[in-house]
Length: 152
Image (cartoon, rainbow, N blue to C red; front, side, top):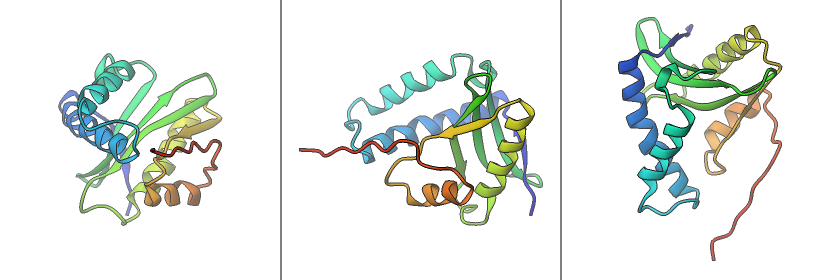
């Protein structure tokens, strides 16, 4: 199995954005950061701030992950400083999970980051997402901060 990363086109970006806003809002609710009411609006604001020009936003690289002709997911790498990148999102679509696509996509995006001159890549993972945390740790990513919170 091999994967390749292809730049998202406008149609793919719009499909991703619809999914991403809903998913981000749900993750923030699950993590206890946001209330249900207003979560979609907050998520929409975040994405508008991060990607004001959509898939053409400077220093942002949004890719479709493909296995042959099949779309299996997406990954988003942002070029934050001259030496540091940040992975804002990695999604392997339903039915393609637990097949190694996440690992292969991460390795591909690291190669792209190196070619961009980046020396480090950061990312965020929700505390409740044990699968993602395990993947990142397996690939050599280390915790740099841990935020803890209790709802009263």
